[in-house]
Image (cartoon, rainbow, N blue to C red; front, side, top):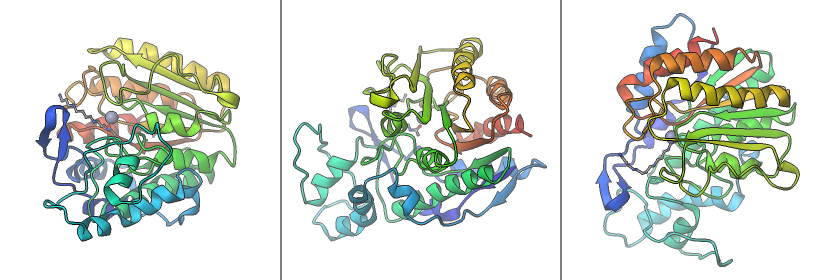
Length: 340
Ligand code: SP5
Ligand code: ZN
């Protein structure tokens, strides 16, 4: 299996993030995550690690606003030129509710407009890492479009919380959405997101489209991040009505309950008869994940892989979250191994 991976992610290493209550904690979405996954992939006889190609800005601009990308591109330099006391990472403290149309010109105003939370920390290497991450997803999509049965974008930073003009939840460019949109020029796409958190960004990006079916299985946003998207009644709008589906889950959901929900998602995908499948693969559904509250085991993840593979669709798998670094390697190879 082709695995697209870039070293550019290493320069995106924010020193901390802020949890609820103002708690400053070491950044959970860290470079070590990739080292753990690479280590395990190297031990298989099927993973072929490949540098991504550069697809340029066009496929990214097809999903994200230019003004937002310009913000990501210049935010760090502007931050260094500002009079902030602690410049270790750009993080605003005032966020837009977007009830008023005016976009401020100053850096902190734009940051509060384009960032949705205190985990979307920007440092010197953030923009180049996010671009390389999107190129990993695009390269993997290209492989699938050229006849590979499956391909893996080992993306970091992840993408599924990023919308067309905002970052959040460790995500800056929506890698899976960029790749799915690129593939949609060649045929209908189903996107299945199995990260523990609702893919609010992906949901927003495709909400009014009928050519990309988006499905997310995640912890109920009533109690879990991202709180403001991911409810069962959100099913798309306009031409896209009926082409988005959320499956909110309770705390402590086990393998059996998860797999029966997955079956419902898979039957929607079968009825849609897509040309391509994109899987946003977050491993934070794992029982011992520090951010998760559901109880899927490594064996459960293997079974998820087996059932998705049984759809027999040309499949692009994109890395999203997962923060139990020690277990990340075995979990992702359990999922991917079912496609070999
Ligand atoms: C890609 C991805 O998985 N992003 C997840 C971002 C989640 N941010 C959550 C912030 C709230 C943290 N609450 C901590 C509770 C720890 N028990
Ligand atoms: Zn997640």
